[in-house]
Amino acid sequence: MREYLLTLCITAAVTYLLTGPVRKFAIVAGAMPEIRARDVHREPTPRLGGIAMFFGLCAGLLVADHLTNLSEVFEKSNEPRALLSGAALIWLIGVLDDKFEIDALIKLGGQMIAAGVMVMQGLTILWLPIPSVGSVALTQWQGTLLTVALVVITINAVNFVDGLDGLAAGMVGIAAAAFFLYAYRIWYSYGIEAAAPATLFSAILMGMCLGFLPHNMHPARIFMGDSGSMLIGLVLAAGAISITGQIDPDALKLFAGSEKAAVHQTVPVYIPLLLPLTIIAVPAADLILAIVRRTWRGQSPFAADRGHLHHRLLEVGHSHSRAVWIMYFWAALIAFGSLTYSVNSASMWIVLGVVILSALGLVLLLLPRFTPRAPMWAQHIVPPRYRRRRPVVSETVDAMEAEQRAPVAVGVAGVNGATALGARSRVPERRKAGSSR
Image (tube, rainbow, N blue to C red; front, side, top):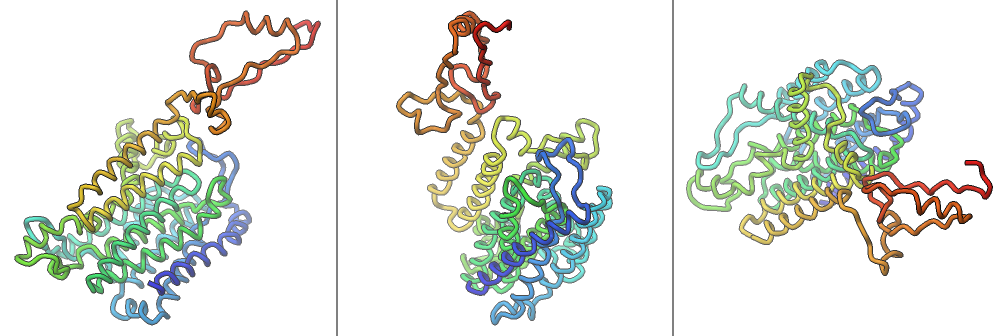
């Protein structure tokens, strides 16, 4: 664990220290595109943050290669080199897109090639444990197609959710933390060395996200761009692929009996393995909804719009920061809920806790729809937007009479308490005595 933490800290430090110089380089290189209709920021912001994240990845792999225990991962497996090859290719495509805005189909082809490069070097799915059937061995073509599909889906899911400051890095960091705990438990508790590369990938991914977040939180000083979002999506998918289909259910030795019985009984253990997208369920749902929405409108599935989940949160009335934290909450609930259920699926307290937290999440989502009316004794405790408005005293009697005679429209923001959804009420324009207006 100390070596994993050291690798995480080195990756985070290198990413953090390089992000500042990369920001200056992006400004000089002109990687500051104009604000588009779907963007939520108001000022042009440099991209190419993925450059710092890629060098953080390289630093983490280099440090791990020289540590006593983690060096065995490089000696016994070719997966770290496969990850580095695929990451370098997808990172280069992302840098070109951040600077020159390449076509979406070209990016899709590059993602498939990057996944194919990892498959050629051994980072692929070999078999799948299926309940009531057992471990089903995959042919070379089946494993290749499934691996490429998983990589492409994960990359685009992360890329689609990268729309608010700090959103993609934070959500992937949460997913990586949950997956790290799961992979470390499989590797350390059961002594299965096949889970060691996935544990290393998750630790490095956490470092990349933690090192970049201080520069990317609202208001962001730099964006990761496609060079960063596609990179962390590929690393996340590589960790899931590295551990999926390479662990025999009988190796866990949780249950005695046939292989079918072992697989059937250990379904909760394999939830994060068979369905790695559960740790990024929110970006995956956003991806599916975006494809359905654009296809229904007769548009290309790759056409950009303002219909993503984070855009809808802003339209509901949430602030930029609160929308990001709500997305963090749902990502953590799904990721760590799946992790906890995989550890102990028989406990009803886990299910009850997930249900209660889900209800809390729904309340947070609908919070701007309510009209808060705090009692008088709580006026000094709640934020200003939830306090009752006091009548503005006019400087002249005429102004007071005019305000009394003016009709008040029902439902106007600012009447009987401000709302988070409506616009802030404006102070009536004061008139001077004897004014002609």
